[in-house]
Length: 402
Image (cartoon, rainbow, N blue to C red):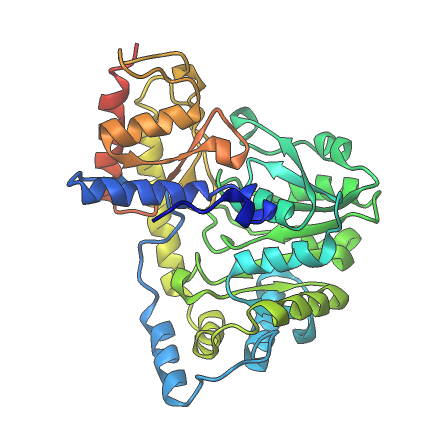
């Protein structure tokens, strides 16, 4: 097929980067098609099935005729359930009319950027950050302002760094906790220190992405919106994909000041309208019923994390962080830069991940896409057998570098 002239496509799409996680997943599929045994540790998707009682709720909803359009902001029973969940788990008082249900938390973040950003507005990003934050901000006309902390600080910026990044053009701070890609969890004291800074800048809103809330290995998940100083200007993003293994259900949500919620519903009404009816009915059951399957998944992820960390510690040159949530490790591999196996020279994290993919047939994601060119992201949302074999292959392959 003839190539399409670039002049046909918009500047918007031409300057948009391909998702690095999806790119690595595609490369893994291509190598598998060539007959290679590829272990894919690139995608942020639980390998567990959706709990049976949630699937049964969807079956029942279909039988009851929940196959029609839904209100743009969500079925009333789901927005009420989300409001109850926010009170129960997060000490957040978002009323149902302050909640918008979307086709995944990614759409929620897109909606927020579309309604808050004008050209040139700035968004402070704690870096490393999830790959799509950067591109969504750009698509919305905004300017990402990364605030970076390395592995030595468990990738947690200082309050002083946050304050230095704030300008009159700053519209909001965007971060995730537990964090994708690092697995870092911001505790109460750390969040309080950020809130002390934010209290001095009333024009700055906060967008807190808490999609990994239920995969938290500490004793407490703290929502920044529970602090009085920023309660009225915090937007809390969450969803069902990670904690309930519901990635394919495409169901996310947010709680926000009502004028922002109304604006997000307005945008969504012109793009996708409401999320699928039977998915929303299942979401009600997910939030309000027994969470023991979710807790079991969390404990399985904790065990896998410990296996991965213990094996990575045996590979000279890899400096692994100690994630307290999500299902990622984000090791620093800068000691390998400049080394070669005689054919390939590792100049950066992109080269490192390509080398591991092509030699060890293990799919990782370069930290460059997350704002850290010295690291890579490994997802341990895979079986213990796969994880052990993947790291064994990595160790053997890296021993070839001099």
